[in-house]
Length: 310
Length: 310
Image (cartoon, rainbow over all chains, first blue to last red; front, side, top):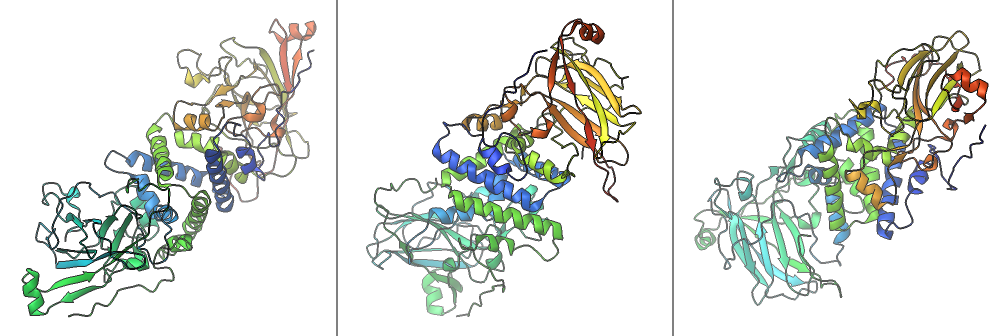
């Protein structure tokens, strides 16, 4: 009879135990794993196991989670990113954005880019009306681009986009809305000023016909984003700002489906009915006016301006 | 000019802030969410945000995570469940199994079912050889089914399945292996005994041509499962046991890719070369012998025996 010598590697955690499960899994990483991947996976396993230990899922609940993730993956196409929607609706996208855009006090805060940004929108002179379909309540948006000490910044690029009165971006309604409806690029003048005409934005739902929509329904949540204008403001030497400004009277202001609202980004939209102002506006009827200044922080030394979208 | 009254719901956490991000998201759940879903989602969001705050992913890293989850979803088909592989390789499947099968001391421990179980395998008399392809080193597996006090349990069903010498289950090689190769169902006798003939199991890789395989490679991990026989042992009045027994000399014993090995499940496989025993075995050559007793805990009062696979 041959003696069998068990071949056991001398690891600290060779076999699975519930108590040490996190350590068992993390001890398995090889010696050549990059330091960052090691750090990330160690944290992923730690928090994943902590969640499982707190939840104590039944086999059926675990299988429901597998099914949910699978359906979320199957919903993803070239045109639909359901995992980003999941990240958005669980507040993860905003958290990642916040972590990567901690700014000195006084600088305009970031919020999420969203999926509807289009590069190469038309460049306009100040005062142009970007609302090409004539729908909705007219609005004048005006203000300045400043540094954090309040000095004007000339030559800053202000890229704006928003939904129309029906709650859709132009790219969601190709052939229905005019191309580049409610999009435009402006440049701040010598005093840092910009202004343009548009319409008051409307709230709109994120796509809710997939697993994320079902999740929101089960959680008693609606899919609506609070009404906003998107802005990207860039100028060499300063941190790019990717942000929104929100209307203060939107019914979804305090319950934006993707948590995009920061208190500092709620603007003051005033209704202007003065006949002289109405005549001067070119709208021919009362309109909304919002004054909004952007405050840009100086770019950190050695940090390239880089792409604003990645 | 009309005064605009901001419509803000009086929530404790209306707007996103990095510091309170978890509370902001969880405060959004509606009043009619089921208590269990509320508990689960509260924990999911808590641990997810804690992970993000510890990792501080860049935008690119966040996007890489979205891409990984999307590719994992796209790999899932009717025949391939990549999210279960992910759960397995991160130790989550074993953790869920452990949580749901905490047993009194002395009872045989559970381990994962795996994807290769087939119901309705052939029923055999004791001593039958379930190795239908004649490959591999022959083995005799024998032992008893007992309760946790060591009393024999008669009439227990012992369902066994394993890979062949090439490291594949019959269902992975339809038309190559005989149907039901290395599968069989036995019934313990009046003294609780069972025995059958088979071959010594081989280690084998989990499918590693998808995102999970790439993850394992990046983590310096191999895809191999330690060599094992699968068992399901059931008898009315006792907790069903879904488990493996492992060979002690497998090179992957202490690094099973799905963490299925528990120390208590490593068996003693002895090589038998005695001519009389060889003659009696019917193998005509030296063989392996493993003695393995199962100890079953009494079913908890009021808990139905239920399906062993769900």
